[in-house]
Image (tube, rainbow, N blue to C red; front, top):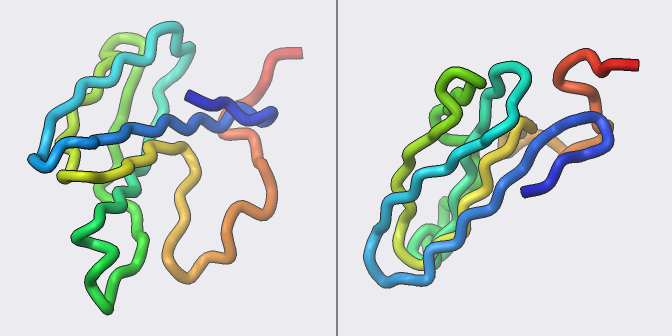
Length: 103
């Protein structure tokens, strides 16, 4: 897992199996709820001529419910991140805090 200086969180999940898999991610120590946007890339998806990397349905994790269950495509890399980027966005230009930081 990576946390940016502004507090944005990114976690990478790798499925090296030729079959889809399931994963459960636990984020202990959260002080507030976070919304994670999943981005998945697989060999099959990349072979499609119309492939675009777009976020899947957002997932919420909170101090009271710190686990997220998700399905991983075969032979895939999935990123869960508090950054939300659409295919038309130029990328992360500025690391904006996702929540107020304590002094």
